[in-house]
Length: 247
Image (cartoon, rainbow, N blue to C red; front, top):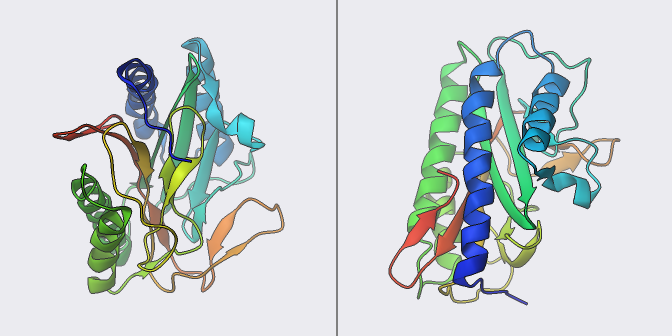
């Protein structure tokens, strides 16, 4: 069931998103060669706690405050004190904050110092996919309009689109209806309405869109071992515009 949010609820979600934006502003300069993926997650945990929030992923059973996925890891990378970031890595960080009962969700892929041209192009195209999906997310359109906007850009660039995971509603719970697939023909296709709050999060791979799950039962990796990028914003739909709450 799709839960449309009222003005008070959107204000609460907006506050959570504002805190998440602030966290990323402080976090991103810290993601550099030499730090561990656990260092990244620990910073997020301390920041969130110091501002009166909770890591949203704890309610999903995830063992850390942040999903930190490196290179061929698509999403849900489990932070480790042994995993050290190196120059040339792509590091995707996905964090949600629960603040006053309201949940925010955003992800970005960081290029660590000098990356390969193909890695840079992958990140740039993934960001274009995200912004195109958001542009298509307006009252009166359908979820398939978001799907098509993302898929067309990624496909034209020759990249694979992850089809086993998707965007979703968010705000009162971490994962709500509707699901937002990024490959056409997948899932239901409801009309986008004012009051929807959605997490739009294309996951784009350098090679195949197929994925596997590691033995930790969390970390999703590309099936061919090639690079992946992940970009995400939480947006709120109004009758005449869509607001990017985590921008």
